[in-house]
Image (tube, rainbow, N blue to C red; front, side, top):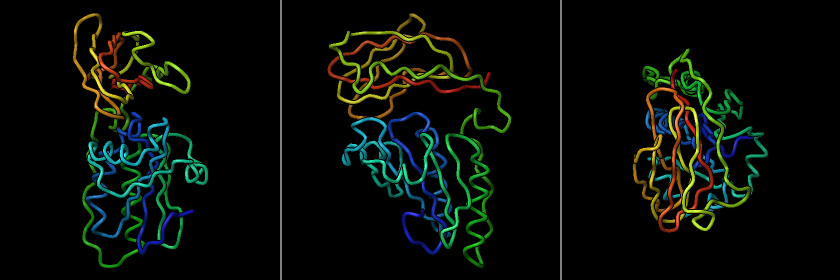
Length: 245
């Protein structure tokens, strides 16, 4: 079910600008848009909100701009497109070829080379006399390298079902985790004072909805991150990225 008619292929990417796995895919989507839009590819983002604030158009525009997104993005506030496409999580990607043929789909992170190869083939099938295609993108992170060995990161922490952690629930909390980094999905305004493994680590300014890095590591490891709230930030989840072993 393509969402628009086009002369060439259309890449439809379901995301949430405040969700870790979605954000980690965006450097590839941004580069593919820059590389292949002049050749006839249309890249269309679909903001499928995971948290209540994700339906707000102004906040979404601000959050996506911060991430460098310049391709058009629809807000699927009732997740009708999400359901119609059969998405299985964030992110979900679908490449439609000329004539409405589904040429490629992928759920989650990974297989970026496979997606870019599918884009190139879809363009070649749609247009004649194309210039020589560029070399495939180099992996953005070590975890994107083919064959990279990555232990699974810790399970995402969602403090409360249906509402965020606020200062009224307690000014501070800490989380033990394994992985290559810790990230907070937050909104509101204020500051997060971060400790890592018991030592002062960083102060993170919260100025609206989005994904905020708390700590990042080159290698997989076991850590403990402490979070102290100042002002009126609200934390919906703390998630953890993979890293090479």
